[in-house]
Amino acid sequence: SPSLCEIAKARFERLGWKNVKVLCQDARYFRLEEYEGPYDEKSKDSYGGDNAGGADLITMSYALSMIPEFYPVIDSLASLLSLNGLVAVVDFYVQNQVDYRSRNYTGGIIDRHCTWLSRTFWRIWFELDRVNLEGARRDYLEYRFGTKLSVNARNHMFGVRIPYYIWIGCSKDSPSLERQLAELDAAATESPFLAALDLQ
Image (tube, rainbow, N blue to C red):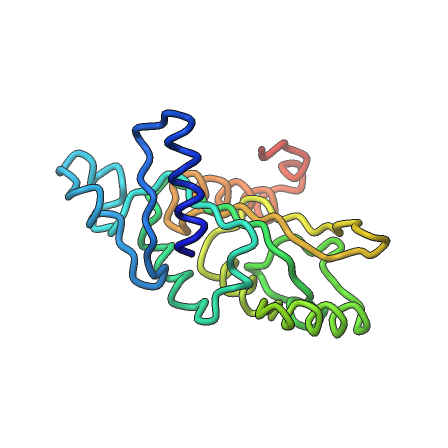
């Protein structure tokens, strides 16, 4: 959004931040190395080899639901993220339990289900402003990345409860995620006594 980029530029200038770049780009095709320069061999190793980027943190706040072509954007995020980086998303959603039940990559099952009335009302309400609450956006995000945290909540505003989620994920190739999955697998399959361990 060019107008929001101008606001951001003015804010950073007012704060005196010299190490911040504001770019207005198409999220489907953005590549970090075009603006940061090529990585040297040492940096490439720390960012996972041929990874096209190297961002330690990517955030999206009330943005994913506004992007019409979300599949290439989520794929682009995966290419931007460093091997140990995090992706954080906060957005509105509506979803039926049939959409996510029995999926082994989905996190945040508690309070995720929205009733038919809630799903219908909020989809229509948000579509008036060209915001799409289609459940596939969140599903693909969770499929593409490893989930570290997933929370479902309701925003209480003007007496209504708007469903939203907070999601933090990482590369599926992240060494920390592989260790956690190995610990979880050991707790679930090798010994019933390991299930009591604090895996965090």
